Length: 208
Image 1 (spheres, rainbow, N blue to C red):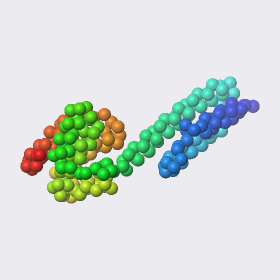
Image 2 (cartoon, rainbow, N blue to C red):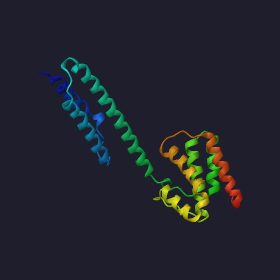
Image 3 (cartoon, helix red, strand yellow):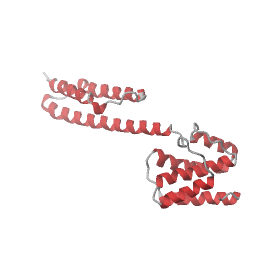
Image 4 (cartoon, helix red, strand yellow):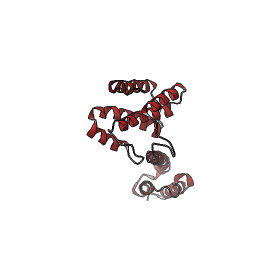
């Protein structure tokens, strides 16, 4: 008769590990779907110990490997879920800071160049995106609102100035990746977009 005690012990051990504080979401996070996903994964891993039938001679070794792989996999899932949760929370933050006065598109572009020259690339990326966005508002192609998403701005551009749809998409993707996703700024791409924006303004006679 095959002894199931190693699996029972490992299941209990796994449940003890998963009950630790580092595997629990903070209270009040509001991300109930993450909690449900974690509970599903925990139950799935725990059930493996009941479904699997392995000869007793290999039970200890295999159960240990399964336990290690399961915990590592769960840690990876939790890490991804936390990164996703943080990214979503950042995406819901307003583009403009509290009490920030909206400046002209030329001021934002000048600020972007100055910040880049000082090595403040992340802040420079934000100013560059705002230079484009404020310019589009000045031309009445979008209406800047704190609650709007880039998707909504893109829809306005599609309706009012579709020739700039791809330009806005390029600027918005870089801004999102750097400002919300903590990606590193591609310096060559940054200066290329500066030149591109200045070229658009020259054609419109709007360079400040």
